[in-house]
Length: 386
Image (cartoon, rainbow, N blue to C red; front, side, top):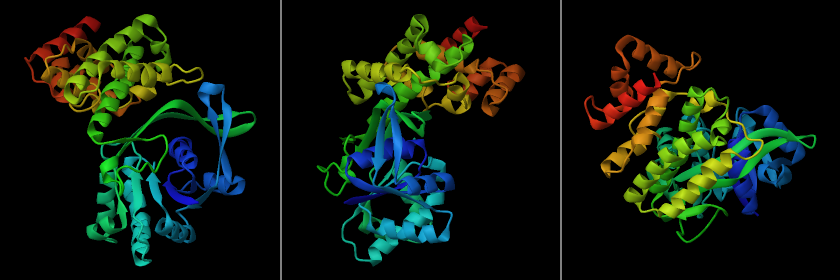
C-alpha cells in the first residue's frame, strides 16, 4: 500500500487532506502534537467523518496511525516514515511550518541516505499563497539539508485549498463534519510526472496563481463581506446574512464585481465563476447545521483591508480593468465600521478613526490615495453609514 505522512491531525488534516489521501489508497501516518488525538487514532486505528450534506452520514477513515512529534521516540519514527513515504502533506497553519521543518528535513535527508530513488511529493496544504515554497525555504533554513539535496529527494508543488470542516458529535461518536464542496488545486508541472494524479479529487493546474486569486477574491471576499455587513445589521452569523434575500444580494453584487475582474485578468468564463460563487460561497455556507459567528469571520480587519487581500485586492484589480467596483468599495466602508473591543486590529482602526478621522484610516489601511476616485467612493459610502 502507498504511504502518506500528514503533518497535522486537526479538522483540516483529518476531514480534508486525510479523507482525500484515504480515498486515493494511501496508508496515512499523522504527525501531530495533540497527545489525546494521537492516542485516539492509535487506539481506534480509524476515525469518523460526518457528511453534512447527507444528514451527517458517517464515513470511516481507516489504515491510519499517529505519532506525537513532541516525543523523541516518535520523532525518530516520523523521520523513518518520511524516508519511506510516497506523499508528505501538511495542514498545520503556515506560521507553524518552521516548527515541523526540522523533522521533515531529517526525514528527507535519511531518505537520500537510504538510497530511495523515488522522489517524494511534498505538499503544504495551508491557507497561504505558495505555501509549499514557504515550506521548502523553511527546510533549507534548518541547515540540515541543502537545496540540491531537497531537489534530489522530492518535488514541491504549491497548492490552493478550501473546505468547510467542523468538529462534531453525532450518533454517539466524536468526529469531523465535512461539507461536500471543496477545492484542492495542485501545480501539475512540479510533479515528477505532470500527467499523474497522486491525490484523487484534486485539480491539477498549470497556473496556480489564478486559482489562488479566484478563491481569495471570490470566496474569502464574500465570506468577509458577509461578516462586516452582518455586524452592521445586527446579525449573529454569516448564515443569517446569506439567507436574507436583500443582504445576500448586496454581498453577491460585490463578489460578482470581483468575478468580472478575475475574468478579465485570468480568463475564467463568467458562467463558471458564477457557479463557483453559488456553490463554494452561498450554497456551502448556508448548508443546514453550519454556523459561522460574525465576529470570528470578521476578525483582523486591518489584514483583510490590505491592498492585496480579499476586499481591496479585487477592488484594485477591477479598477485596473475599468470595471465598476462600487459594491466592493461599499464593502470597504462596512469593514471600516467594524467595531469589536476584543479584536486588536478592529480596536486600532476605530482609534485611528476617532483620533485622525476616517480619511486617515482609508489611506493607512487600504493603500488608496487621498483624492482618488476610489477614495472618494469609500469616504462617501462610509459617511452614508454614519
